[in-house]
Length: 247
Image 1 (cartoon, rainbow, N blue to C red):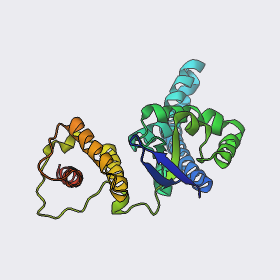
Image 2: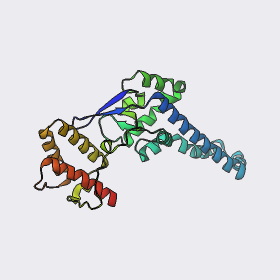
Image 3: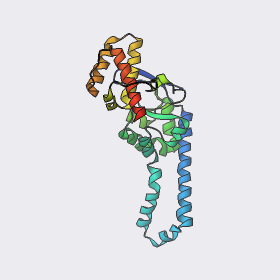
Image 4: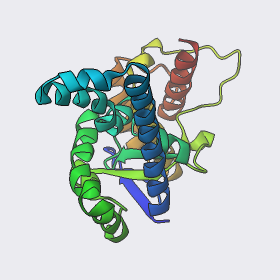
């Protein structure tokens, strides 16, 4: 497994483990099996149960092709749709526990998934996936061409679910939130805030913590109370967890 360092917009390096070639291939074949199952079900329902093949025989070639294309669309846009809905994961990736992320620290968006999906023509459809395999093996960040173009990478989520590596904060049942405006932040914002804060705190980098406090105030409209900058950031993280758990 190769290490993948993602540099956030706050110039904080976060280390992830790139998904192995084997994991990516396994996820691909799981997705392929799901697509095949879809075709089997559709074929059974429409051709054997509804006898749609008899209707096809009475249609002109273009009409029949148009209807067949409608049936094919879910398979064609399978990875694009699911990765957009599940934030970088298809069903295969969910099962194998790998995920598409941006290498700049942001959550990948629809445009990034679209680029990856389009490059599947080159990476996977041509030469039976050989181009993707070679690109993943020889690239420093285990990227296929679609990843390189979109600025994404595929990481493994195994052995990563600890409270320190997520946006979760330990809060008790009696916790009383202080700053309701934290709901203006997104999960990705909070993840970056937490990573930046822990990195700066470990280095006693109070200047970065000060800048982080100012950034949070600017984005949310919150005004810090009398507590220190470090306590303010800790409260922001706990408040966000409180409100997201009780909404």
